[in-house]
Length: 446
Ligand code: GLN
Image 1 (cartoon, rainbow, N blue to C red):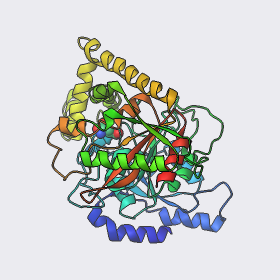
Image 2: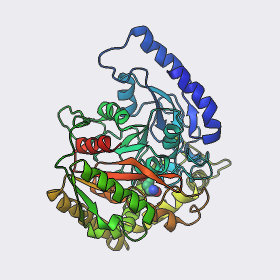
Image 3: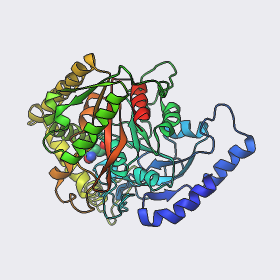
Image 4: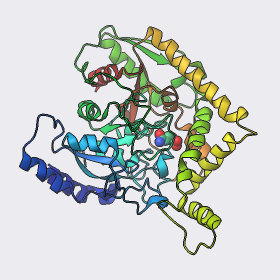
C-alpha cells in the first residue's frame, strides 16, 4: 500500500504540488510492521498518512512553509506523530500550508503554490491546503491538518472532502508549531467520514506536555455512526445564510436540511446574534497570540539567520525581516499593536469580551439543539491570485468558521454538492466533547 501510495504521489503531485517533502523512510517503516506482524493495538497498521508541515517530525524537515524554517530538521516528534507511529500509521510526507498557518488559500506559503484538486487554476483553501489537495487528488486517504480559524474545514470544503476539527483540548498540540494557542487544534482531512474516526481515536487524549488537554475516559468518537437521525434536533443559524454568503451555496445547505428532515431529524432556524463581530475579534486575538508565539524565531536559537550581520540588533531585525513573509509580519505588527499598553483595553480586551458573547450565543442554542448546521464557506474556491492582495477580503472568507474556534467547539465540513462545478461544504458544529453526534450526522449525510 505504501509503495503504491508513493508511486501515486510521483504521478500526481508534480501538478497538484501538495507536498513539500516526502518521508524517505516510509517504505522501511512499513516493512518493519510487516516483519513484526500487525499487533492488536495497531489499528492503523500500514495506513499512509500525510502530515501538515507545521507538525514537527523527528529527522524530517518541518518548515511551516516559511523561509524562517526552510532547513529546520526537528530532533523530536509531536505527540500526535508518536501516537500515529505506535498505531502503525506511515507518514508518507509533509504538506504545504500558508506560512505559519496564516491564510485561507495556501498562497502565503514561501515555498510552493498548491492547486485545488478539482481545478488547478483555483486555490486549495488554507491553511491546510496541501493536506486537502493531497487527499482530494487521491494521493492519500487521510492527512493531518491544524485548525485555528477554519484551516481544516475550509480547505476540506474547497476540495470536496471531509474535514474534522475536535473540541479544544481533545488533542495535544505538543509539537504543533504554535500560531494562536487559545485557538489551535489538530484534526483530520479525509476522503470519507469513516476514514477520519480511527485516526482521531488514535490522537486524542490527555498529554502532560500540553496543559490544555483534558483527561477523559477512553472514547470511540465514531460510536454513534449508523444510529438513526430520527429525533435529532438541528439548528440552522440565519446569520450563516445571510449577507455575504452566495445564494447558490445557501441553497445547497437548505437542500441538506431537507435531507436531514427526510431522515426524521428536525431542522429549525436560530440566531447567533454576535456572528458579525467574529472576524474582527478573531483577527485581534489570533494576531496577538501569534506576535507572542513567533518571538522565538530570533535568528539565534534555530531557523534562518541573515547573512553578514554586524550587531546583535542586526541579527534580530534582519533575520526576522528577511525570514518572515508579508502576511506573518502584518499579523505580528497587528498583534503587537493590540497588546500594547495604550491600546490593550480598546482592542485585545474588547476582543476577549466579544469572544465570551459568541461562546454564550452557542451555549444558548445548544440548550435546545443537538447540532448546528451551516455552510462552511461563503463561496466555492476562488482563483489563485484573486484575493491574496487584499487581506480584508481574504479574512472575510473565514466568517463562517472562526466563531467555532473562539468557542472551542468541535466541527466538521462534509461534502454537500457543487456550485459551478466546484465542491461546497456543509459545516456541522457540536457541543463541547460531543464529536460523536457530528460523526453520526456526517456519516448519515455522506
Ligand atoms: N484563515 C485563518 C487565518 O488566516 C485561519 C487559519 C487557520 O485556521 N490556521 O488566520
